[in-house]
Image: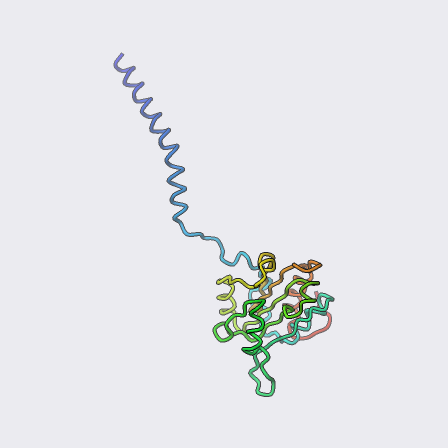
Length: 206
């Protein structure tokens, strides 16, 4: 009889231990998970069209191709930093201050920015097409650093919530489809054409 009671006590004790472990182990795992840093990719929000290309884009061509590729009038001029004395810099401190009312411009020197293209200074274009913004950086490293920071880009809340981000080499494209028509597919096509044909206008082979 003593053996029977001993077996019962062992069984009940084991059962209680099992119940306690079943309750505590998931709680412990959850607590440990909460303390573990996130291991997700910080660049998940970026659609990478190409890691390195285009290597030597002509910004004037990249800017002009926006209209020709999409078939739209974006009214998005190129504002650039010139290293040639005969060609004036159009991405000036005054123009950056003007842009700051609508969009974040990376520090030109810190991130080696050599130009931006945007329609944000044209209310008519933004109303019809949504917000387009391209940042050109001269080197891959600073472009990656800027993207890792994931700064707020558009001042307008609706544009910022809707924005999509594309990267092709050291070119960073932002588009918010908040206009009358969503041109996201056209922007994707445009970015792919910039990768294939970054230095000459005209039809771009597929």
